[in-house]
Length: 182
Image (cartoon, rainbow, N blue to C red; front, side, top):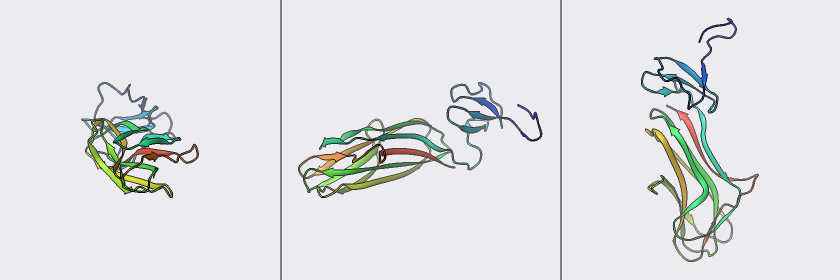
């Protein structure tokens, strides 16, 4: 690392998330080409510099409906995994539409971990007249390591079945994880 031209400034080490330096020093700066993150080694871990958000860290979308849902069901394609840093804050956004074959009862969309432990949920009435647009937003800190979050849909009362989606290539349902800083 060094200055090769006064117009260029300092050049960080360039690597990937799997080829970071094995013995970093305090204050070492790297740029990961696979994640587009710039990170600084703080003596213990690689962290984003200061209060800079890193933006999108995980995203999954679906462009087709999932039908016939009554019992707790994992929503196909609505799962994400990312590497979380304990000092960072993450915002998880889920959006989609829910419709019912019969206008009665209540649905629950849950954001869960891989063991189906619920971390956030949204509820709404089941209706056949039109889809209920759902947006679930959850902010969390203190996560570290490989984290997976997925969406589940359940009809908690009433008859009939649910459909999740009403999605298309131009209007997908999605789950998005953003690093929003410290």
